[in-house]
Length: 489
Image (cartoon, rainbow, N blue to C red):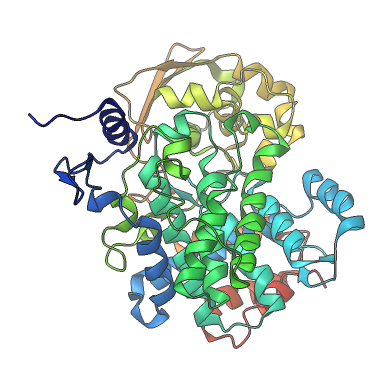
């Protein structure tokens, strides 16, 4: 066996431990045969460069028709939730706090008349689109893809004119970037406590904004590198305004990275995959094949889903079951003795708040979600308001909701059993809730959701026009018109 000094051995074994894909252990010597070292695995080399090269070269014309359509659905859903959230207390606070420090009036705040500089507009729209927890979800990673990406490029498109086809292409590339990077580190990264929408979303914002800024390959590498230096979001923030801060900040941070890179602000060329880079620093799992393999052949955008309920996705099966049983048997809260659930462990880990006192907390309470669905037969933003979580009838019913963790139950499943006071027992099993890939929301469902969200903010005529504009964005000569159409008359 060749003699290897201790320093070389430690360096080699550390490199193996740091990568999810085991490096090629073939040893090579230098010309003087002084030192042996492990050759890097092709799967872990030049990941940032490979991704950047794809983003720069990818054309709208190369997008399959079904990918374009899903991009339009993602866009429509985002515009609806951004408008809908625009008058939440959280947005009022953000607008008031940032107004004195905002620069030129360059970009719109959807659903409001205020205008801010591009960076602050991207942030506020990102917060608004997530405040109801009603936005899109990439179920493989629980990333909410549109928030960071759409918020960045829509603000940018009001400052720098781009046509609708370039805009949609950038949106899809941004979604692809953040979801592929998320795939590489999920679930370990999420389990450590990071809010992956913020930490991976910043890459999507940087990639999409960089695409619209016509970055070169080297500049795109730098943009991704600068994005890697700005991970934002911790799961401890869930249930507070801070949660929606994360996609908002990811949007502005990614835009910031792309703008700097456009002026040749440099970064390491391997900020994603390097030993001390993003993936190894904030995750115990790194599967770089998820990032680099099949670019332009498989699309994560096709795996995006849209929420029929304004809360954490892990509660959707239970809400679906509750509404179905309520409607089938015309149940009233006073008839119900107990509600028992068998749920995946993530349900209590993420949504175990027993006694929420504010609407944002209710979005992370399986007890409230089931109770309000039983009482009101719905779980939109109105069911996760301060009014709803403080309703005495709902409070009384949620004390009779008992979730039991069962690792055999998948995150997309639930088993519900309701015992009525007359002794009857009702049962419902959900394998895939409405809104999942297996039971997707239709285009009509998305339009109805949009209309409900914009009520009281835009006129009916404005809403119809904005929906039509969202569906036809590819035909726009100026994608910034979409933002202007979302401003109240």
